[in-house]
Structures are given as C-alpha cells and as structure tokens.
Image 1: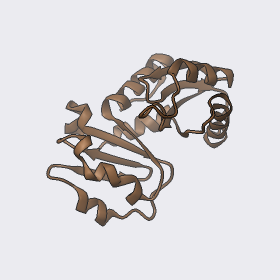
Image 2: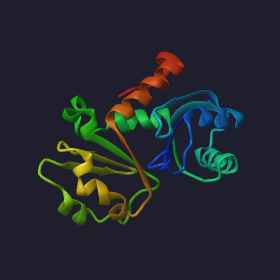
Image 3: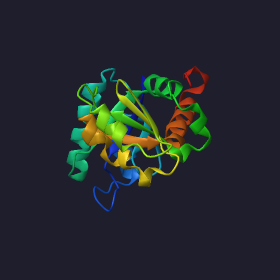
Image 4: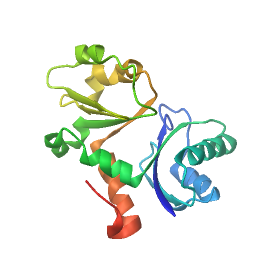
Length: 187
C-alpha cells in the first residue's frame, strides 16, 4: 500500500461545490482507499491505496467525484514523503511559530513561465516568498487576506495552485505519522 495526501481545490468555498468530508471519505473508500482520514472542511485527506501511479490515481479520484457529486475538483496528490520534503525545505522556519502567517501553495506543474518580477512588485512590507519546483512558500505576517501577492500568485505563476497554511501542512504530516507509525519521514 502507498500512503497519499490529497488536497482538493475549491470545495466548500462560498457555498459552492459542497462536499462534506464524510461523503468525500466514503467516495474515496469506494475507490479502494484505506484508512481515509480528513482534516477540516476544505478537502485535506490522508489515505492508503494500492495504486503507485499518482497521475492515474488523481484521474480516478476526480472522475469518481464528478460521478458522485456532479463536479470535478482539482486534486493535488502527493506522497507523504513529498509533503514531508516540502515541510523540511520551508525557507521561513521562524514563521512556523505563527502558522497562520505561513502558507504553502502546491502547484500543478513547474511554473516555468512565472512572472517573478510581478510577484516581487506585489510584496507588501514584511512579506517574503520563495518558489521552488512545484511549491510557493509565502510568509505574510500581516495576514494572508491582505496580501496582494497571495491574491494574484496563481495568475502570475501561470499554473493551477492550491494553498494551505502551515498549521494544515503540519496536521497532515501528523495524521500520516499516526496512520503509519514511526516509519513515516518528517521535517
């Protein structure tokens, strides 16, 4: 069995694409997912599955949700090792003490055509960001809701993204460790 973390984009936001976590968990279990555990209502799931190919599993999950619920959310699927590596590479370690000020955007692909100059121009006083492969780290000490950089990041990166605050990233890693015991790598 392979351990996976799935981040669903755009569900349960503003009354659109409503998908209660118990229904999502049941749908995933119906697709052969084992030990399905969800965290908060924004679509964060840790589970086990026999499928080793993340692209194939992502397609399968998205198609089944479309069939079950009538819409196809973007699904960002990664191994727990990939999430642990992302956490370990956090360039803003000091921001971990205030987890709501630190956000990680997971990218659907490498942002080969990212407009870094435009991202830099949007930074407010105190904001920092770092783009690495398929991850954008953003430290927004004045709040993510006030961040112009956060609001326009996806457009300027040129790829689909989904963001999670540091508390969520940490909780998903904790859930994965509980699911597998001490064998799961951590930051």
